[in-house]
Image (tube, rainbow, N blue to C red):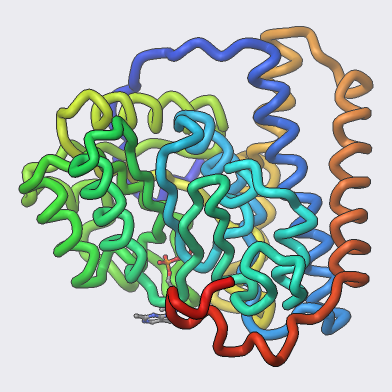
Length: 338
Ligand SMILES: Cc1ncc(C[n+]2csc(CCOP(=O)(O)OP(=O)(O)O)c2C)c(N)n1
């Protein structure tokens, strides 16, 4: 497989993954893919407006990473956040309703696709400013240390965000203060239409940690079990009080940058090759078959269920009420919150 010349570091310890856990990871990945396919449909029908960045192809990253967390750990993400909030356990209905801009959405319909939030799942956004969420992840880790609550913060961002000043500043302070933070760079090789080759002299984004003295490594993130094991090793390290970790997960997105991007900056062959060889859903199906003898027929109920939940989420979002215009300014300041 073409890893774009990237170096993949030494393997981490093999944390055990049972058949039940593997099936659960598969269920979550399937659900994210099916919900996003419904979102793509809704976007073309103009039910979803504004920006909509799909995560299709990257599901193994969110699902494997969130499986390595405790329920009260903090998670912060960028605008490509549908997969991450669902991997944290958010209801697909509330996610879809948010994409539709409806009052039953995760952010009461006033945030939209890029601003999904779930207090209940310790998922703190969803941000549109590239790299802007990285200091917020560091802040959550600072809170964890200050409160001595044993939590870890996990921050998702793209390789494009790893070019931003805010990224370096946040990592510097995290390292200086030995914060319980894991910074997870999802290197999908394109920042909008700009390939890694055209945006970065250094192709191994995890090496951004080197000059800061931060523990860092890079790994292939197509197989959800690999993601789980790598993120777990980093989370364990941070939770044990050993300081932050910068991880680089090598992944790939199948859709354009956003729904309005025809992706002319890459060949169809490149995308097809990834779909054929690195699709996380196929890889987990292969694992289930080879390690646990689970065949296609046994997976069918899970596949049907994911389809049904995604369709149900679409119908729920369509029928949900619009936000009340009187609430337009209600959530700008804490005092206005209901
Ligand atoms: C500060 C800032 N600069 C530019 C943009 C425009 N922009 C939106 S997404 C994006 C690409 C970011 O790529 P990456 O961080 O790799 O994440 P990906 O989209 O691949 O998930 C850019 C440049 C922005 N939103 N914010």
